[in-house]
Image (cartoon, rainbow, N blue to C red):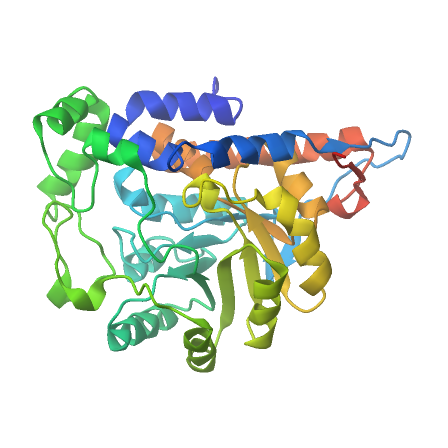
Length: 381
């Protein structure tokens, strides 16, 4: 772990440890992957303006998001199947996030249930991400389970009505449900640490991993197809649905996947508490604008009425500071925590969070800033 000093190191180590099909499912984008390149180009084009001799001995990187005090302006983003990256990975991630003093958002499509994660990480600041099922009564029951665990922040992902074109998944044989073909068997066998440390540990315990939050009647091992229409993702979700959800969910409601000022204003109109400006990590629409280009307009338009978060493309603590300076209250990270988890489970995620904390602190010190609010940017153009 000592030799892993930045996100690139963690990513390369994760690539060695994970089967190719799983690594590329996490790492890659969609179609020709222009959106991935645009995310980096947009962040790299932003420059900081340093100020010297400011006399700050200590920097403050803490923040408050939806009434929760966090030690860093970071939230672990919801990622499907994080439990395949490390055995009981969702619990390990929640524990690492608790140590780092940051929230962690659990996916509807996690392997471990929210109840099990709460029991395994009782001090974690748990959020929950929702994909709405076609049978709304089943969604309602899921939210009742979530609320019973003490979760008060619900993040509804709204930018994925259909499965995007991720052709590498087809080439690698990676699908949900998983299909074991000669190619995938060879892939798994060539990564014995993952085979022995993750997959076989599941098989020797409860059996093949399942989508933990699916209702028991529809729960199926991820190697078997599930054809139940009731638990398919709702592809006709609309603003009226979110208005109704706002009436029934008593906690904080966050809308994830906002691109436009118009949609941001609709989030305010329906009574949402927050929104996430997100290009889904470059994984959905290959020609969508990167977060850094659309975040300032959205923050200027609604930032005084609703909490604005951002995600996508972050590799360094300096990227986090750029999004904060463009108007975000906090920044969600998806891939980076998974790389830490893949490298060493809870210890690996711990190490990744320490790297990010140090990068944020050092960047602030070099800029002569005590907090992110003191930063001045030089924008392209």
